Length: 78
Image (cartoon, rainbow, N blue to C red; front, side, top):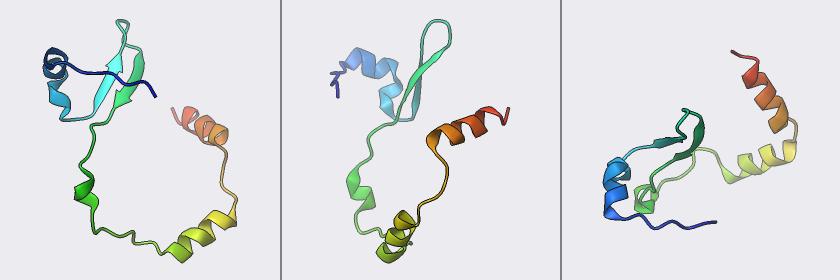
């Protein structure tokens, strides 16, 4: 992964990274998204409502759709 160091000028331009950002080129084409880092301490002590046993069962069950099928479905929604 590439690492970019952000100076104070860029940080201010990007609203101090306090919310999700969408990066676009000059024509408006979306290049990507940025999600601010979350303090992991926020999640300390939290537990999934789904048991480990249930998660294992689901992963072994198989089935579902491929990513290509999901993308095709989403593209046909419009």
